[in-house]
Structure formats: structure tokens, C-alpha cells
Image (cartoon, rainbow, N blue to C red):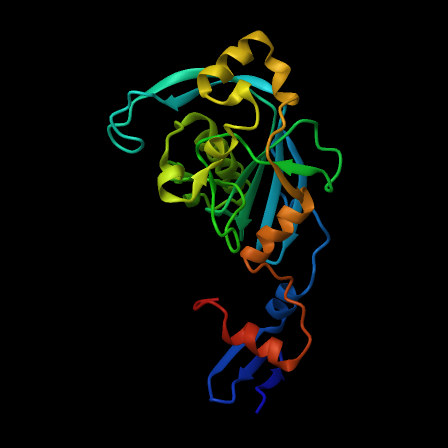
Length: 274
């Protein structure tokens, strides 16, 4: 048996074979099933955004930070705990190559599934390959199916932006908080304990100059641009492929309507109060 769809004036009604009923304004139905020309939807994009993708309720910003020497809060060798309360940190100065952040928003709200990568050249195409970042708070999952490739640990993400009603402010503040969380809140061994590993741990053998954070510091002092010559671990995936993977993990969809069943599902599964 198939569901039934009835249009009545400005409203469309759906009834499932089991008798479940729902309704939606025709205007809302077509709004949710039609593709909008790609734009920023009134959101002023932060400096450094190179690419923008949308698929259904999911939007991904691709942000690039040029190579630079940064002062990072890094877990100390003599820290009494590897992470959490009681952890001891020290400041390190290390050079980073191009830092690429993929920020995923769901219905205009920053999600918890954001990713970070390295590159040794600026982004010039969505087909450019991404490299794994040698950073402690970027997690590797094993198996990787259904998980981010390089997840940014967001335990200490300041989520005050979630209370913003204006999408422009909410998305911009959310992204600002994400970058702050990635760079400023402290690198520890949480990913090494709670996920499969951190990409810093995975990268210690790619080059003697980055085998330890101390060696990384010394190499950065001698030549800050050496990081563009390091054979960082390859993802084997382009920016576009990683973004498509994010959409798949989020079950992103442009809600193409192919049958009465698709319309019924959209109406019957809408959140309460919609």
C-alpha cells in the first residue's frame, strides 16, 4: 500500500498506510524541496573562506590560514594527567603549513563534526588534495567509515553562539569559536585515549624535524618555511571528496522528490511544531 497525498487550498495532507496523518503548507513543501541558487544566504563570510558548499540542511565552509609560526598551549612532558583537570601545559612556538578547516553547519548552527587538515600550497581548486594535520587535538577514527577523517575535538568549544537568533551572527561567531578552540584551548592526549589516535601521534615518523614537538620548535626557529617541505601524511582525497564525505555522514540531501512516498515522508517526518 502507498501513502495518499491530497492538496487542499494552501495545504497538502499526507496519510500513511497505517493511518498516520500530517499536513504542511504548500509554500513550505516547495521551499524545502527546491534548490536555491548557491549564495551565502545573507551571511557575511569570514576572511579566509575559500569554498562554500550546501546540501540540504548542511553547509560546509572551507577556510584556509596561510603558513605562520604560532604559539600553542601544548601538554607538558611532566603533566600529571594526559588530559582534563590537572593537566599541565607549556607554550611552544611551531611553524604550521597551510591550515585548512572544514566547518560543518546544520541549519545554520555549527555542528560537532568539523575537520582540520594541512596543505603545502594554497587552495586553487576543489580538487586539491588534503593532508592530515600533525596536531594532537585532531582525531583519527578506526574504522573511519561514518566518522570524520580528522575530527577537531570540541570538548572546550564555547557554545554561547548557539543562543544567537540572527543566522549571520550565529554562524560567524560559531566559526570564530571553532578556530579559537582549535588553536587556543590547549593540545593534550585526549584524542590518543578517547579515539583511535591523534594525527600528531600518527605523524611523528614522517620527518625527523617533527618527530617531537621539541624538534619541531627547533626546526621552526631555524626555518619557519620548512613545513612546506615536510611529507605530511596524505589523505588521498580532494577537498571536494572530503566535503561529499561530510554530506554523506550527515545524510545531507537536497530532498529531491521522485514519488508520492517522498512527499509523504517529508510531511510525516517533519519536526513537531513545524
